[in-house]
Length: 384
Image (cartoon, rainbow, N blue to C red; front, side):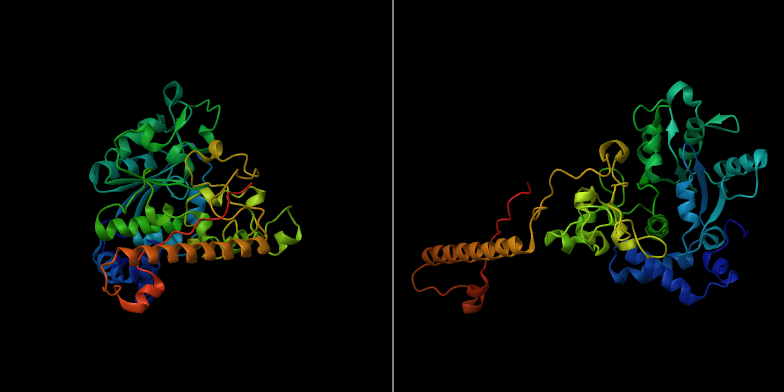
């Protein structure tokens, strides 16, 4: 591995990564971060001048699913992550070292790069009985998290377990498992919820940090808005089927084969936020709903408890009713248009009466034709 302060461009060149591939990666990150294209040059410049940041990856109460997710990314590949973009100094699952030597490497990073390194945490942290339900090299997960995460520059909690306790916290939670920010209050942490996390979002957060030296905009759960700011239902390629009243009624039926909406099968997309539909998985190949399974809202807070049973239909969703067919939908749209036209006529008459006698309307006939105020159309009735 190159030295810790080896400039990133030199490391990329030594690995045979071309300028073209580098720019392509920067474009991908700008798109993932939902930044305007004018920021591409800023990202390129920042990464070209950056030294390789030191990173440690901690695993606690977990299934290693988030590590597996990272290992299967190819934009960039995990090899490029390890050898080029980051100085990845500690990760139990993939590091060659073991035992005392491995733990010594972690401690060296904490001592020599205090306040500079990035800590990634995977898995929940047990709090019951002094934290004895997860120990590594004789230390509890709570001890390690306190030591490592309070001395880092930033902390990234990847996956549901590291964010809010995930599956191991679901009732009855015998180990007292919680997420990082609850176990170590006050640490600077960004939560990348999901079961597992999407490595494209993790890469984007790291690129944002290297470019702007700060986190991207966050929501109330400390999740980045670029990844968790939009409702899945509004991004879904099956949304048109929902609006037209075409639903899967039974697994394997004709609607399922034709890609109809999975709402009636328990899909939680209408109340979940994540960028799964746009970033997708496996090099942008697919995501659960496209492959035929409903969203289980795995990036939502405490989803194991709050979103189950996963195959039970949501009670109601804003928008067109779940039992609306195409004919009824047309009637709604026609009635809505008539209502809008009627309201527009009344509003126009009111404005005409309020204008002084002889004064011409603002904008002339064109503005009157399109209206100079917004009229909200009443939506269709709520779903049964």
